[in-house]
Image (cartoon, rainbow, N blue to C red; front, side, top):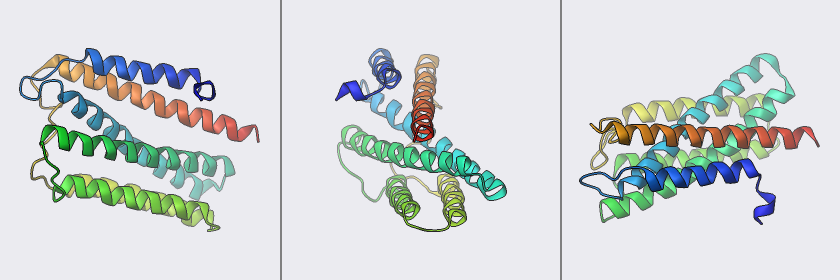
Length: 199
């Protein structure tokens, strides 16, 4: 099975694990804070990819180039995958850190809602709809994601716990994790585009 996974993806995956292992614990949360590292980094990277997908959709609407549409569709699939991974990590983090599952937490509801919308959007993309409609859906979804991220409140969920930390070490490792996760996304997109071009 591992033979089918590109070496670059395996290497980046190992680097993510190493960062999580050596990253400093936090005074209150202890080692559990590493779930927050991962949850925050995957979520932030996913937001960027939603916006990149929307950008590709916008460019397609103006250019009608098939290669741009393929790039958009690949970004869309990878975004949905990462958002679902982020949702799983978020749920685990909630159970471990809060020692309970607060299903009424607005940010959790937002995660579920976006996951449903992204999944539905992906299903629509595989249907025989006009490419311009699919591009429009991706732009609309990114706008929804951006809007929700700005207006959805919090009950238990803290406001940017890593970003507001006084520890420069925690911030540094968190930033490194975001960079590596983004690099993995870029590599996944590159590999998918390369695979498509050989068809």
